Length: 159
Image (cartoon, rainbow, N blue to C red):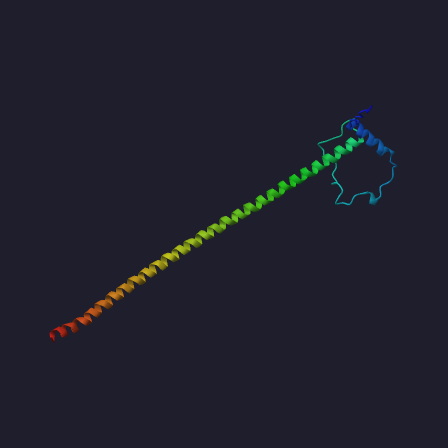
């Protein structure tokens, strides 16, 4: 007959105790510089934040785990705050750029007004030249008629 063997259910409290016992069995030795991870891998060097404190009766493994997690959260919170500072700096730069844009816009309005004044001047000059040219053509036509009139009168008289 085959017996069904159920695997034992893992209890986190039992697991913590087992891990803690294994750590206690390890020989205590002074740490060497080579025992530590390089700075790029090591966890951020943060003390425990003021907003948490260990509960009475917490196991060493539980305390260490809780500290590690709260340090990660605290590091993330500090990064979020730094992002806020950067955002404020970007907003300041945007405000400065907006002020510069307003100043440039005023200069552009002045330049556009000068162009319009120059356009009006050129427009009037062209129209005046056109009027003078028309006047000159009219006078030339009148002079031509005056010169041609006596010759026409002589031609008619001589017929």
